[in-house]
Image (cartoon, rainbow, N blue to C red; front, side, top):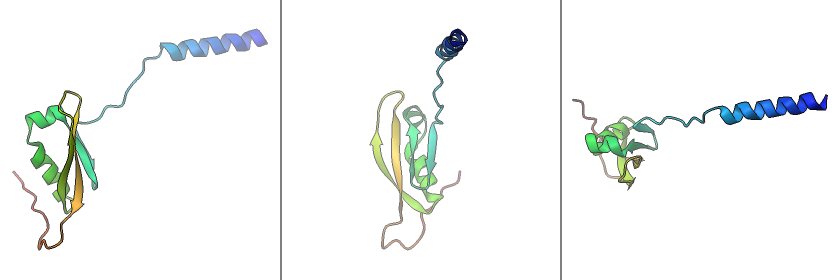
Length: 96
């Protein structure tokens, strides 16, 4: 009985070791009401500032850029903040 259990354990470990590892895929632009990230490769092709402004304006907020990782595989990160005091209107959302 112990030999069968040991053989099953070896077989399961062999199957797990042979299975390929998978990483999650992240879209080039991802965000929510608190902020988001833009892939650096997309930021070089499109206007990253306008993408972030439009995203935050959809939630009635303004954008604040936080960091840039200027290499392939890096990201541009931003935060969406409430409209500053003294502003009379909501942010404009540009439509093309």
